[in-house]
Figure 1 (tube, rainbow, N blue to C red):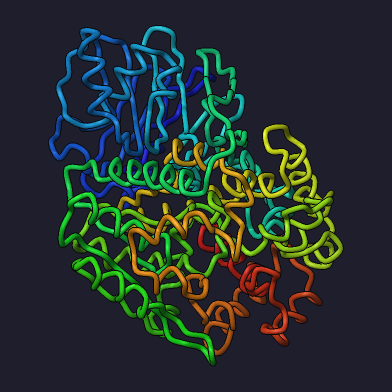
Figure 2 (cartoon, rainbow, N blue to C red):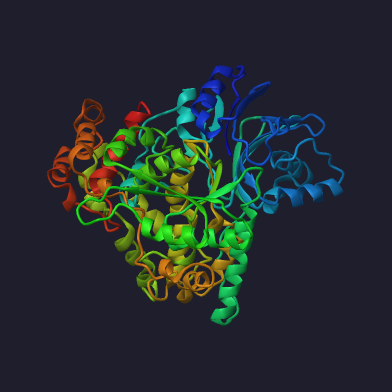
Length: 587
């Protein structure tokens, strides 16, 4: 896991290496172990390294191969790199390192852009061709690794984080009205290519971008998720197939030159990962849980469940408790670590959890993706049989309708209901005919990418910690897409995964009430947390920006707990988080 960046100029000017250094410095936490820069002609590339696959200097980046005429900066993990290395050796390729980086470089030389089809893992990379002057950027199928870019007539720049591009300078920082509408409507999800800033875009998952020597950009897809139900089979056969695919996904993510732990929330998903790692023969591996102070009747931890799992599998378990005082003290740092504004309460949880985990571990498995892939959210059962799937989905998932959106923001940022148009278009695309499948597809390929997965990447990498997500193994995701929707949403949802889990983990964890990462202080804004939000929204920066209507802010500030979204989030926190993020980035 690392931070990558680069700049290609098309105006005849030399690349300013100081810009590369500023981007690298901005991403130092993503790669605390080492760094490097490579420049040639009108191109320069930078890298910050976190050593996971190969602990030697042989996998140092940027990596160049003069014999092949290629160079690479790479962020991610290719879990099948030993198998690909063996295949490439048979083709005559020689290797000077033991990691996955060199495998990516030589795979591109051997198979061209089709190498993307062979990679099992998470990745974002840039490869440059010495002789053609072409540069290729690519992102993994499910967007686990981020990749941002800015482009104009003079230059093209890219980086693993949006703040790194801001550090380089020369970026249009005006608010993008399309992104703003998505953020305040589509549960804070801003689909690619948009970001909150007009001058920064993000590469879509499962896409690659080609930049030719003349500066022409072409973006193409290399994978898509199709919901094609398989021939009928019994529930037991589905369950065994699921377990087999999940076991393979977990085993793949144990490939590393360092020990791999687990972020154990106490829910079914992370508990199942613990059980499958133990089943794979790994003993006394590390597990970690975090908890916060309760607010009123709402608990702030799920230690009772994570303890059950840790004891059942004899893990080296660590409970991490966070006081309300520490939460408030660390909020600004967590917000600064966000590549984009992320409203979910558990960002601060993952940020503080990752700080503690990174003291004893460099790589962990995490349970993100199971709800989206296997139908665990409460809005999926109502989708079954719905004759108006978009209306059903919007009622459950959207934070606001367009009428309320127009009450939130000032006139210059009101154009159209972009979020509603986007979701309707996604639901109309072929490849997911069932109403439930439509919701599962948009949640897996869009919402998951730009909410849970992004926040885990950002918060773990803020402390140089690699997070691996077995539930987003693309072969497992493809298998899940062949399952009947009814087997996923039966009962309270995630039925088939729960039944598969019964053969692995204690029933007490499976049959518990469904919970979410509890950070009550950010749902029920009170005391100093409320003051923190109020100060940002009513301060000079926010007034000068003029983004929000004052009467709407007063409505929320007068009674924050009366304004909760359908997904149980604070509307005030959502707006306050955006303003605090803009200020943290100097915008």
